[in-house]
Length: 272
Ligand code: A2P
Image (cartoon, rainbow, N blue to C red; front, side):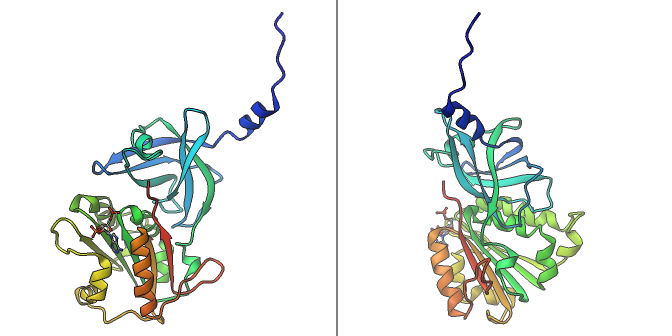
């Protein structure tokens, strides 16, 4: 008869701390630097469109490797969608980019974030300023009914290096018109303003420069930005966030938070 070893305290603790696994249902590769994927949603997970969660994979030593990812799907979706860069030597994305439907990832069901409607005071026009994968929280918010109920106009700007980097957002915006759930709500309230910086396209230049030159206002037939009417959410590189803050403050908008709503909010996009 073999003697059964008692479970050591450390093993028991590890077992109790085992991460929440979710199943990958779909993966789309957009470019050699960008991909999106969908995973099952934990039944208990409630979140506000625009929030982020920690997701990741188990390392070889059995410990979880987690990074913050904005949820790109809206709060009403049965699954969760994420939009990610691929960094060839990035600890997580070098491995995450190889996931396939049926694989499992770890998802900590504790959503947080400042890019939420609650952090803004009521307004008329809502700007979403994004670069690169910073479009992810706005992919959620442009599918959120509250966005259209609360605002008369929504402007989504997306600045990327190349035209191919815009494809995820472009197709999503295009699909909203015919969306059976929110197509009617969206109507012609949503304005999409994509720009590229390293490849010629219909509009080239950083959004920050296009704001400073007032090209954006001319292109969209808007006079200016004003704290009485305009609200903004910003998500992208550190540079974008810093530059946009200065521009928005220049128009008299103040930074808000969940606990202290104001005219704009900022969050850094996941970087690798
Ligand atoms: P640029 O090509 O002029 O650097 P990345 O791929 O490096 O994350 O950049 C994504 C996009 O964000 C690029 O088009 C890049 O423009 C743009 N970008 C980088 N920094 C800023 C900034 N401070 N303000 C506006 N756009 C920026």
